Image 1 (cartoon, helix red, strand yellow):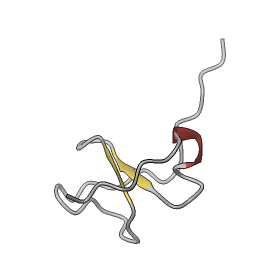
Image 2 (cartoon, one colour; image 1 turned 135 degrees about the vertical axis):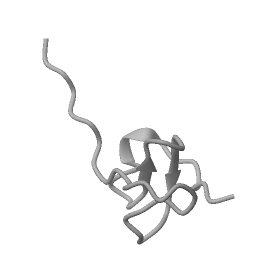
Image 3 (cartoon, one colour; image 1 turned 45 degrees about the horizontal axis):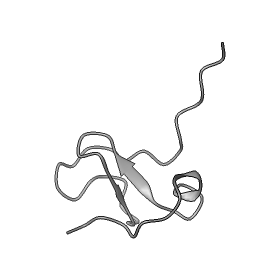
Image 4 (cartoon, one colour; image 1 turned 30 degrees about the horizontal axis):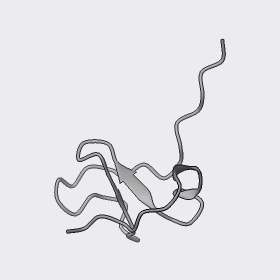
Length: 51
């Protein structure tokens, strides 16, 4: 119900979508918390691990 529109994963954060790590969904919201579980939303991608 609250899911954001599908776009390539590389640009999700660049266009303003945020991810809830508990629900596993991307949201297009100005809020800093998830609408269903109230967890803090991730606004930046996780950094890649270096070998």
